[in-house]
Image 1 (cartoon, helix red, strand yellow):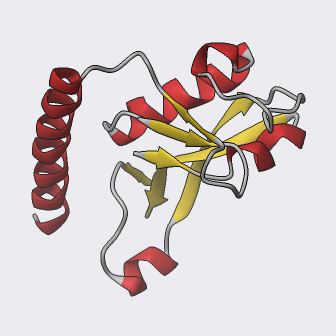
Image 2 (tube, helix red, strand yellow; image 1 turned 180 degrees about the vertical axis):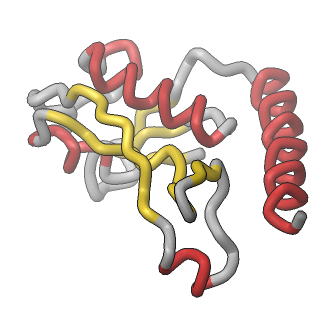
Length: 126
């Protein structure tokens, strides 16, 4: 996964992340494919602390504020996909490579995500 314009999150004291939906009183962990079903859904949010400091000039993952790293880790957990690049501005040279991942890690995580996605699709169809 590539996270772009990460720096626009610098100014928020907290960040709300939709982690599920409530449909007819039940929590579902997938995005409804049907627009009519989606219209009946209420988002379920998780709040994460913001970092309230500029990331605009940061070029190395290790230099991100702790709360920013925690946000990236949570996005990876929720999506099942590693964040390989984090963009902190409009220019191409403002990308930070995530050194926590090696090529084999990336391939195994992508395969696991594929299985998770297929399972969620099947759950949504049943």
